[in-house]
Amino acid sequence: MSTDQKKNSKKKKATGKSDKAFLGRIREAWKLSVGEYAVEEGETRTLLGRLEALGTVTKEDAKQVLNYAKKNIEKNRLELEKRVEESVKNATSRLIIPTDDEIRDLRKRIIAAEKRIIALEESEREGGDVS
Image (cartoon, rainbow, N blue to C red; front, side):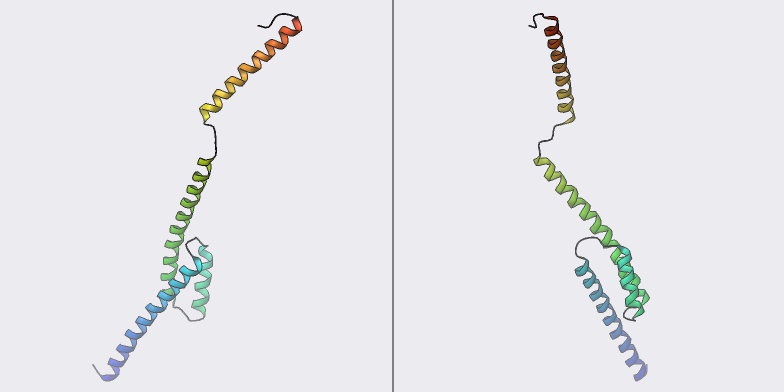
């Protein structure tokens, strides 16, 4: 291998490392900007398209970051749904909410009370004793 070929080989390796480092920085920036919550895939795609148009990332790098983003967006969306569900469950557990059986029992008692009231009203109209 000639001296020029060795230099080119070293340059490619160095560029490969810096590309990976740059890709890592993009991923890290994406994570920091997105945080732990979901974002629209379209926004990520648009950002990567702009970076690609500027020549900051290659099409291959953009695809890698987009695939990484898709996985994390879905994971974050599921985590967010789980947290919301847990929060709602915790909040509603503090409330006193009757069960279906308790509601059915109350309906029966109300119907029975209405029947007694109607019987009392009819009895009073007839002038009879209600006991």
